[in-house]
Length: 285
Ligand SMILES: C[S@@+](CC[C@H](N)C(=O)[O-])C[C@H]1O[C@@H](n2cnc3c(N)ncnc32)[C@H](O)[C@@H]1O
Image (cartoon, rainbow, N blue to C red; front, side):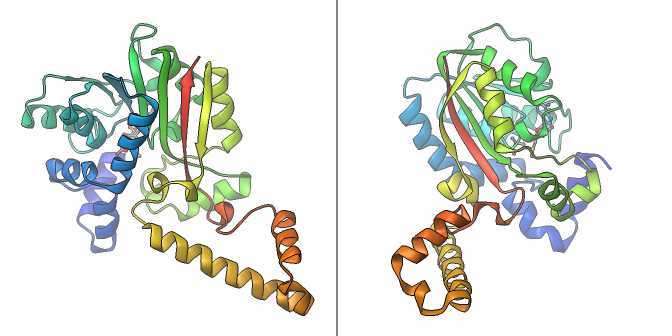
């Protein structure tokens, strides 16, 4: 089944109603854009852009699917270049072209291509933005190298919500639990080291690695309150486990802190669910 066939199928099934809405796969393309552009994730992305690229005018949006972000940026007034390899009118370049017409946007160009094969001139864009697409790379190093090549010097590379795994077991577990992989077989995830080295080797400097719990950009549609509740519950469970092991000693703050250090993470645990998403903020040298 293709990606487009998968989305058409799940739109008809009640079990996937929430997923369709949360992933902006509704048939009404304008509704997806309107909901995405008002989301906490997009608002936080706008804040990052104001902070890290306040004078940016042009954005290259790579792997932009049905165009939720490319259209949102264009509606804000940026000169947007949208690149998407899938030609479909449901989830690909065809959908973006329809939206371009519907919103009468003359500051948006749409190209059908894989990131690895873009042929824009070097140093062309102020921002390269990639949402949930870098982990689909056929060749991660080439994908990122091309994105950085076409970025202007000091330009901003924003990679948003890419699935992360920590070992091969994680990858199998992530693929098995992914709600759509069983239909279209196109999911993927890389270790953080792979993303970091692809970005560095391409000639960009990583300013921030936003781990899953660091930003609403990654955990949206969960809210800050829900994230805090996950952390609190985990801390409670861990304290109980430690108490069962070593009794009252566990109540000494130093012992708890040492336990946290030895365990290698602070609650909530990033690694608990394989495939959780990370984002990267980087500059071209
Ligand atoms: C999960 S979708 C994300 C779409 C969109 N960015 C969004 O956030 O809604 C992943 C997209 O990446 C595209 N894609 C897959 N491999 C790619 C590649 N090598 N280069 C560029 N885009 C790719 C797919 O066609 C798909 O539209």
